[in-house]
Every structure is written in structure tokens, then in C-alpha cells.
Length: 173
Image 1 (tube, one colour):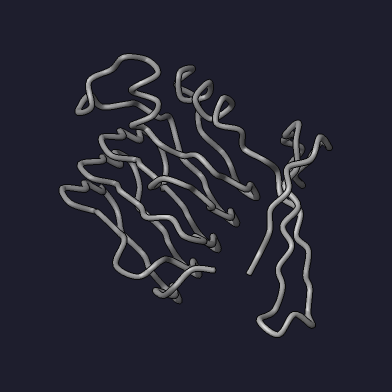
Image 2 (image 1 turned 180 degrees about the vertical axis):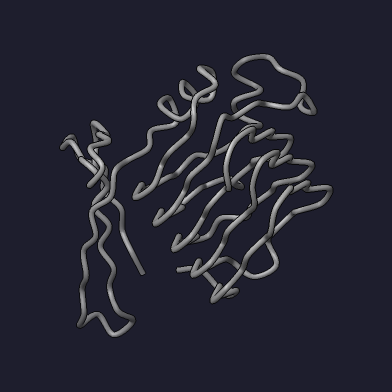
């Protein structure tokens, strides 16, 4: 099991990218004897939606993400559910996803680079990339831990390779 606490302490990645808040994840072994802490940046939904609106690259490497939903973005901006949302690039390496609702990247148009979920963990999230387009790159889920049977890649278009090397398909935490 795990707990997540959002704290008002700045998180600075090795490349200098800053997030105003941090997420402290505490993992507890099933027998309760072993605890491990991990600190990540907290990618607040407002930050994510602002970067999408600015049509910049969404680089959330080393972040705790509890909302990543283009459906929610469309509702907030009164955009039709099948209108493509352009994202300049998408990097989600070494992330911890704890979405209460599905990760929704449906009808996303990623215009540059490979989309990477490499080394990321999905606690209980389902993923939809229904009708998404990755225009100039591939899709990487290498070394990720994904929930079983909760992927929707219907009509996904990728211009390069899709990679699931060493991916674990199984139950989340």
C-alpha cells in the first residue's frame, strides 16, 4: 500500500525544472515492517492545463500526477469531446500516476517527439489514448507498471515504434 501527501515545498529536478509543490509517497510492505519514501514533483492540474493551453511541451518527468484528463480540459474550456487538442510534446518518465479518474489522452495531437511513460507506475489508473495522434515520434512504455486490461489504444496513430520492453501488466497498488 502507499500514501501520498502534497506539501508546499519546491521540487527541483536535476535539469533545473521547478515545481512549487512536492509529493511525498510512502510505501508500506504488506506485513507493515518495511517503509520506503519517495519524493516527486507535484504536477497540479492547473499547471498541466495551462501548459496545454499555451501549446508548449508538457514535460512532467519525475512527477506525481493525480489528474491528467483531456476530457476535463475540454469541459473547462467548452470544447467538443472529439476536437483534437494539440500538445507540442509529452514526456512522462519516472512518474507516479494516482488518477481518481482515467488518464485521458483521447483525441490528443502530439506534434513533436516520442511520447514516453518510461519507468512510470500506474497505481490504479486506466489509460485512454483513443484516436490520439503522435505525429513525429513513437510511444514508449518501457519498464512501466500498468494496470491489467485497462488500456484503450483504439484508432491510435503513431509515426514511429511503440515499445513495451520490460513492461509489467498487472494489478496496481
